[in-house]
Each structure stands twice: as structure tokens, then as C-alpha cells.
Image (tube, rainbow over all chains, first blue to last red; front, side):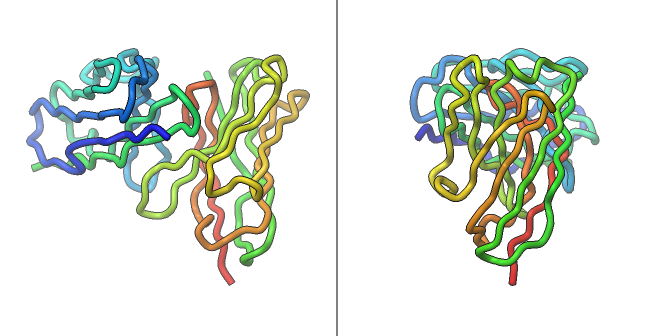
Length: 107
Length: 117
């Protein structure tokens, strides 16, 4: 199984800060990576596919990059509504696997 | 717009059975690979399994913890995905989400399954 390691597990930042989350795969997954946002008590919201492509309607302050084993998710200017847990997910091979999540809080 | 609406969750005793449904719209369902993903309270997301389109063989794959107990099927005439859950255990308690595409994009709102005596 492919292991997805996200870091950090949590972070605290100020409104307007640039926030970066990393996701590392245990083997090469090309660009077969999704990113999700999950607010407390809500379903996950699909944000990014193929590592860097924004889903329709997702604000442009969100972005993703990377390929192979190392990936990055960035919020260019943190907004109060971005408080959530973010997950990466690989779809290179089954079982599809998720990172452990990164909880983003406002400082 | 892709829409996935799950239903069928509820309270069931250990060893019991339940069938979840996922009604799909906004895309060509019969061409889509579909998955189920679950999330226990306070935990992360866990892939349960998937079914390929009939064109691609209609075969299924499952996560190790559910293999042999949970079965995914589809009715393309109804644009509906199913998850038959048998021999349920307390550790199956979770919100179950429907996901579309080979990449398993989670888009549903989920349905809660509680396994408890």
C-alpha cells in the first residue's frame, strides 16, 4: 500500500499569511493526487486534482504542486473561512490512501 | 454539476446488515468508476472500495478491513451505487461517503452508520 505522510499535522497562522502543507508518498505516484478541505462537522470538499488543477469554483488563493513523491498545497493568503483540516489523497493505485490531515487554525 | 447523494445509514447491531445507496447525477454514471470512502468520528478519511464501469469490466476492489463483508454494486439504469454491509462490527461505525471517478473524488454529504448493541 502507498503511504501518504502529511506535515505538519497542525498549524496556526495569521490572516493574510501564506500557508504551506506538504504531502509525501511512499513511492512514485506521478501526479495522481487530490486535495480536500474539511470544515468541522461537514463533508470533505474537493479542491484540487492531478496535483495542481483547481476544481471549478475553488478560490485562486489555493494551489497545489509537485509530482513523483513530494507534493505541496498552498494557501497564498489565509482567510478566516479557510479554517479546516486539509487532506491529500493518492489515486495511483488501490487501495486509494489519504494523508493523516493537517488542521489549520487562526493565530 | 456532479451530485452524489448518499442514503440508508442508521443504527445496527454488531453482526447485522445494512445497505447504503448513492444517487448520482450530473455526469455519465455508466462510464464512471465509483468508490466508497468512510470516516470514523474524529478520524481521517479511509477508502473502502471501488467498482469499475461495466465497460472496464465492472470489477471491484476492497480495503483489507472490509474485504469479504462489504460489497459494492451498481445499477446503471438507476444511476445508483450501493454498498451492502454484512457482518458489521463496531469499528465500521463511520460516516460513509460516495466518490466518483477513477481518482475517487469524494463529493457526497455522507450517511452515518452506527454499529452498536
